[in-house]
Amino acid sequence: MTAIDAARKVVNEKQCVLLRPRREEPLQYDCKDAFTGKKKGWFFLDLFTSSAIVKVHEAINETNQAKLEKLPIQRIASICFQLIK
Image (cartoon, rainbow, N blue to C red; front, side, top):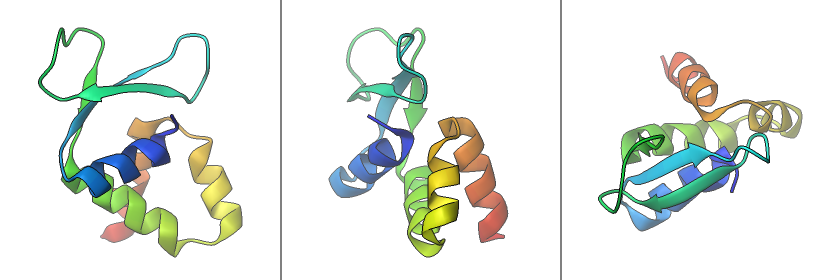
């Protein structure tokens, strides 16, 4: 699952999830429900951050969408919040 797909999942389901990067696949993430199992190595993706990522991704052109999709999710969130200001 890519970062954008994970953000869309959070927005559609209206609940935060836990993500962790896959070791064998760059820019791919494992996803699970927020309050299940161990948390070590996982981080939260909340609805506020996800909605910002989805809105910015939909608003930019296809060239910039492709560039955004090649970044790790922490960098995507940072860029999206800068663009919203």
